[in-house]
Length: 200
Picture 1 (cartoon, rainbow, N blue to C red):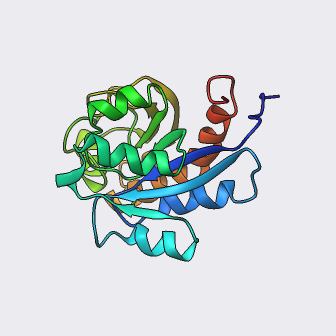
Picture 2: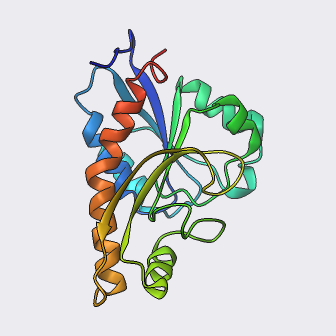
Picture 3: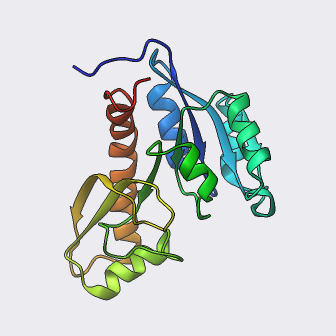
């Protein structure tokens, strides 16, 4: 049995898009006494995740790309909400070095492929599934990993895969991977955060 934190672990979810993974994480922890989704951060003013945050009654902050290198601003937002961990869920910007340092081994990302395949700058969303199809891969999946200074190169925490048939379309691949994300990302986060490493 994992050691539980004496007080809730506060997480911030960073999301650039519609926020389906963010919502799944919020629902997973909504009855938890150990982990609390305290904040959602987005770099896009029109991101669908904002509507989800409001509907779910989660505080949110819009930090445009032009402000994201402002260490004082970003850290002040996170400190105001007493954030312990950062969870990326469809976040498209490179995480700045000051966050990597300040949240050492406490920033987690999910990538829609089995790294080290189909990772790196510019490889996100549908582009990844197109690359999987073009390569003729017989499997794809998700990689949950720690974040470092380079895109998709942090230490792997867990991987989950699904078989790809030769006649699967890009939409088919996307649907299979999305289901893996919804099924496995929230419980993997919980397992990590309630481990000795995650608990304060």
